[in-house]
Image 1 (cartoon, rainbow, N blue to C red):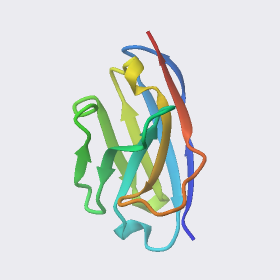
Image 2 (image 1 turned 180 degrees about the vertical axis):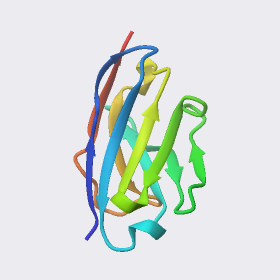
Image 3 (image 1 turned 60 degrees about the horizontal axis):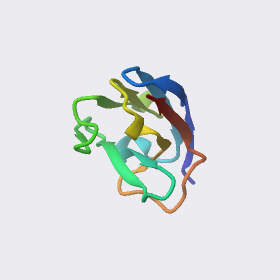
Image 4 (image 1 turned 90 degrees about the horizontal axis):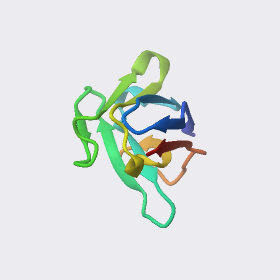
Length: 114
């Protein structure tokens, strides 16, 4: 029932910033923990940031201090503000519940050039 639509990705130079968005529809969205995941070619999908319904957040060590996850429960939106981007951040970014459900959206491509 949950629908996930990511947007906002693009090409950015190293050191730049980007904000990606996730429209997450579904029942009881407000009580679900959400997360941003990313997957680069040849690599496993990894959780980069998570946010509980209360607003408590967690981050992968690789992005901590650079990325900020937030949510707007009234609009069923989840955001990821990415600052000080590095080429290693290049990946397709997905949103999902945390832990993730079996369904994945299209994702949004983030490419960071050196």
